[in-house]
Structures are given as C-alpha cells and as structure tokens.
Image 1 (cartoon, rainbow, N blue to C red):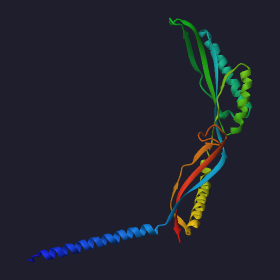
Image 2 (image 1 turned 180 degrees about the vertical axis):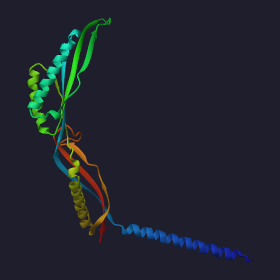
Image 3 (image 1 turned 120 degrees about the vertical axis):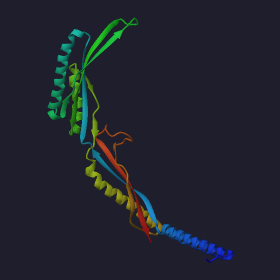
Image 4 (image 1 turned 60 degrees about the vertical axis):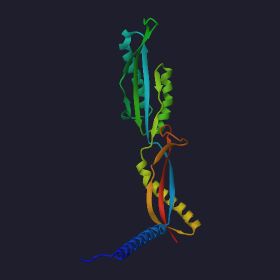
Length: 241
C-alpha cells in the first residue's frame, strides 16, 4: 500500500485547483465570446388599416302604459300593434325579415304610495323590444331617423344607439403582418446604416395583439362604422459587418 506524503498531497491539490481554474476560464471565455459574437437589433414594426364595420346590432324598444289594471288586455293589444308598426317600417326600409327579431313583451307594475303606505297611484307598463342584426350597416342610421315618424304617431319608442363591428380581421391579418415586418426591417436598416453594419436574418419575432378602435377614438370599437386596425410586431434581427 502506497503512503502519500504531505508534499504529495499539496502538489495534488495544486494540480486540481489549476485544472478547475483553467476549465472555468475556458468556459467563461466561451460564454463571453458567444455574447460578443451575437450582434442584434431589437425593433418594432407598425401596420395600420382603415376599415369599415361589416356588422351592426340595433335594438328598438317600445312601451305601452296605463293606470287601470283592468285595461291590461287592451294594453297588450296596443303593444302588439306598435310592434307590427315598427317591424313594417324596418322591412319597408330595406331590412330582410330574417334580420329583424321581435323580443318578448315584459309586464312591469309601478306603485306609488304616500307616507302612510297608502296606494295613491299605479302604472302598468308593457315593455317590448325588436332587435336588428344586419350587414347593411349604413342603412341602420337612415332607418333610425325614420323612427321619428312613429314617435309623431304617438308611439313610445326608445331608439337605442346601434353597435357596429368589424368581423373580417382574419382576411387582413396576413398582409398586415407582412407590412409590419417590412417596416421593422426598414427601421433595422436605418439603425444598421448608422452603425456601419448590415441587417441579417431574423433571430426572433413576437407578434403583438391586433387592436380595433373607432376612428379618432382612444377607446371603444362599436360606436362608429369607420374603424382603425393596428398591430405592432417586435423583431430581433442579426447584424453583420
């Protein structure tokens, strides 16, 4: 059996320490060189489109009221008459019957009492609605104005504001992403020109979300027919000398 002397152990320890420090140097130098070798530019590319809404949702409300509970059957008849007048106006104005959906008629009872909780008056209301879902988005505004004719006839109508939607985003996505990528490369070329290098391939790319806004608005996308679609891409390009 071989016995190691103190000097042998010291020499062995020095050799191990030297080997570890040397390996650490080469590993660190390799990582350093890798970082130095990767020259990149992070840029954003923007693409925008002006589009028009292709779908509209519009609800017209109507109310019939009375103070005599015994007259509720007559109120229902009047409510049905008002409903048919509104539907006739919508269809005569250019909407298809399949685009017009009458809703249910709700009954609401309102009671008015004095300080002693004695009933002093009451109202009976029949509240109905008619929904229009159409791709004739520009026709909606025109027909909304015609509702004034029915109001002049005594109908209690709630002419709600329509909601306009753009539903064909998938049709324009590919071209917008291409444009955003081109714009990103243009920005990278400008940066590279100033730095005296050349733009290479794409190292990584991140697509931002598409946003749809009413034109001229920071928030909201349902009040106007005209919309603005926007997307921003984040792309990292390689740079070469």
